[in-house]
Length: 106
Image 1: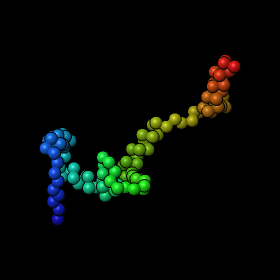
Image 2: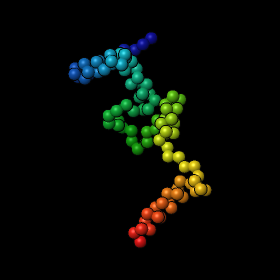
Image 3: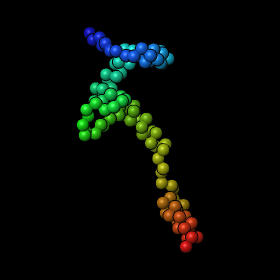
């Protein structure tokens, strides 16, 4: 059995929201269910000001799909240590280049 939820929304917000929901193939029911799920998972609203969260840090646990996406993004962004070049790694080569550059000013 499903429960009914009632809320007051400014007319303009509802019109614009309904339009966007239609564009993405979702309904107001989908929106409300997603909002409830978010609050259940995170203990906070998806956006806006915090509601009496105190000093407790908010921690989000990623779902399996979210975790995979996160790892993929960070793997692509990571600056990996360069392969050795004449026995030196990236940090050693960078330090040497900086030393050569700054030596010109001494």
